Length: 179
Image: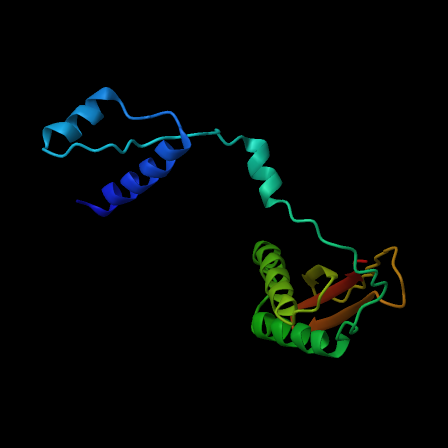
């Protein structure tokens, strides 16, 4: 007798004692009698419900309690992020010449690398915004401005400017605390 048959028999006995309705077809019941064993046990299903999409969503939703934490437990490490900006910009742009198409791709790549390295610092509850500008260094001047509504007690930024013989790069990381 297989293990699943033993489990079925035990379950069937307990349901028979309770008076549940049989779910076995007559063909399955006759097959058991043909093999030389007559069993009083019958497999039953007392209730079966099809799961709905709403049930799946309600199981996945986790209610978190409010922490009532109004400020960060530790402040954003500006000096560490400055070192990250300096290392990434230097490594990626030290030997590069200004080419518009290459620089467009490099801004995206550098921004993603910076964001990944700053996220590796695991600073809780800070939203990070990384902006990288790369331009040609050709005796011109440029002014770059940014605006943000923030709390000066908890929100901060880090910035680094890189120059080589043919291009300049400005990388900014804004850290905005989420209450």
